[in-house]
Length: 312
Length: 230
Image 1 (cartoon, rainbow over the protein chains, first blue to last red):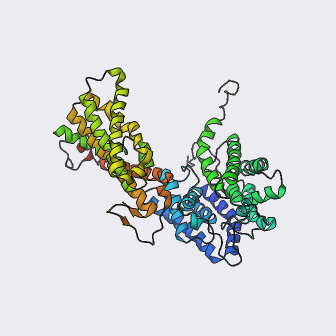
Image 2 (spheres, rainbow over the protein chains, first blue to last red; image 1 turned 180 degrees about the vertical axis):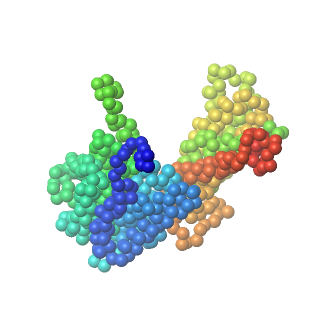
Image 3 (cartoon, rainbow over the protein chains, first blue to last red; image 1 turned 90 degrees about the vertical axis):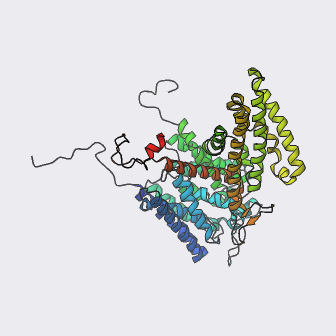
């Protein structure tokens, strides 16, 4: 009778994957693109990233201390939000922009809605839209660096100019800190796929539906050069692999994810073709995020035993 | 007279039309781009509200029940026309700034709501004070929203008036706050703040060792539970 048996309810076998591992995987996958951005734009870009991450963490910690909530600093979600926001900023922004953006992302978009997992839209994207609307001048300031000046590839594409596809793929071009190198972003995305942090439906269907939409409505037909430039340009790659796949703001079921991704592709196309600015991924993302509850509602799987009945 | 004061308190604090009842959201969100516009909208609405409440209350036994809504609309629309012409004549800047939202006071749900819920059932004096209370509540709410939106979004307060104040040049205005999303943000933040204050005041904390009988309790003076039941 000396042996005490542990009696507990299911589940009896637990894995070790938690928010922390997933978030650090995402942060790791973002590293190649972030490192390339810093290499390309110099140490000031690193400052922007650090300020964004630092203030995201600081806001998270301060808020949770103030309202006596459980400390979630170490689950890495604020780190990823700050990093994503920083990577979506132009390399020359004044440092108070990432600061303000991170505070808005964590405080208003994430914590006021209930903290991790409760946010309705992606915090980094909402903060970017907030900054884009408020500080149009600073947020569209891509030129002025030695040897790296002029419009972003998407802007010149929109105004009918030509772009260098190879440079856009490798990243030797202008744009936001983390979005320039398609190659580095793809590497990170594939790492996440292999680690099964994300599944293929959202990014792949997003890119496919976007390509089809641009082929039909882009005015250039199925011109591979134009379509490839649209795919590599702007925030599409970082959006498709890292932000559309955010757990809290994407649907749960496979059918829902499919719908969500197709919707994202169409919206991005619409914003890029007929919007005021050349890019449209951030607005497409927050619009689609808001529709996720509706998508979930129409894609609820039928419970076992209900399949044969009409109207579930 | 006590009833009149109670009406004022009710309109400004207890049933504030904007922050508690959430009525009249259209002007609340649309015209509060500056403190001056917000206050102007609030006061014009208040002028209409007080007189319409008074007239409707006087006529409450004359107006047949079946046609009361058209009758109210006729009264309110006439008053709004008067207010509109007055603003156009004496404060043309405000008239230009508010635009279509002045004629739209006719369909402001606070005015119809108070007519239906209060003025049509109560004597004229109380109804007029109800109008003053609700109107003040609305004006304060709109001025408050306009103040924060203008301060953050444009870096000024009451610009264009003798009381104009502007923040130092260093401040970079966060222009989203004078655009549509800013209206929703500011409204939500103010309501969240007021709710948080309410919860704190009403006290959800339990006093230690409370058995529900207050007679022998030493903490009876400071107890939230007792204060609420009074």
